[in-house]
Image 1 (tube, rainbow, N blue to C red):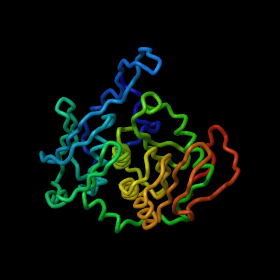
Image 2 (cartoon, rainbow, N blue to C red):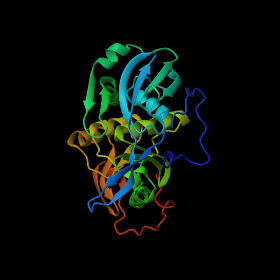
Image 3 (spheres, rainbow, N blue to C red):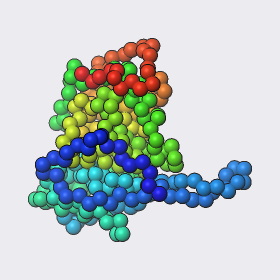
Image 4 (tube, rainbow, N blue to C red):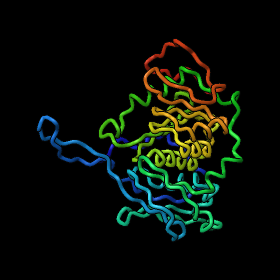
Length: 302
C-alpha cells in the first residue's frame, strides 16, 4: 500500500542543467498485517516497509542502506554528496534503482578520485536505521562557512508555525509509526518532507532533492523528529542549513559541533514548548506571542 508521497512544492521545481538521469523506483511504503491487540481482538494495521538498498558506484559496492524506498534515487544522490564522495551533482551521470536485486547502480562522469582510500575509514553510527559516515565528510566541515547571524535568523512565531505544520501533516508515522521524518522550510513554508526508517536517510534524501533542484540552504530551516547527533549536525551543515529544529534532544557531540560551526539548534520542540541549545544570537524570542492556526505569514527568515 502506498502512502502520502514525498511532499514537493507546487508547481514542481525545475532540475539543474547537469542533473543525472534517474530511475523512478518508488515502492509501496506500508504493508497491511493482522494483529491481536491487548483485548484479544483481531484487526488489521499498517506497518512501514523496510528494504535493503546496496549502492554500487561505477560497479563497485559501496554500502547497503536500510530504507522505506520512497525516493531512493534522491537518497543515493544525497548520500554521495553528504559523504563528500562527489562534490557536485554534475559529477553523477545516472542513478538506476532495481528493487528486484535491491541495488542502486551509480554511474559517474569521471570516477571517484581515490575511492579506496576515502572509504577505508568508516564510522558505523548506532540508532534508528544505522548509518555510515566516511572520514572525508567529517573533515569537510573544517572549511565550512555558514551564513552569519544577521543574514539567517528565526522568530519564535516561525518556529511555532513549523511545529504546527509538522504536527498536522498526514504522515506515515501517524498511520503506522516506526519511522523518522525530516523537512525543509523557507520561513514557515514547507518545501519538502521525507520519512524513512532512519533520520539520516531522510536528511540525505532532502540533500538529494536540494541538489537536483539547485536549492541553497542558507535561508532555510531544517526540521527532524530524530535526536540531533553529530551525524545530523554535520549533514545539515554540509547542506548549508544553519538552523535546525528537532522534536527530540541533542547529544553532547552534536552540541559541540553546532557551537563550533555557529549553528542554531532547537530541541524538545512540541506544541508551544522548545529549548534553544545553541546559536541564541539567531533567535528572535517573542514570549507570549499568539499563534494563528495557519501562521505561514508570520516570522520570515531575514
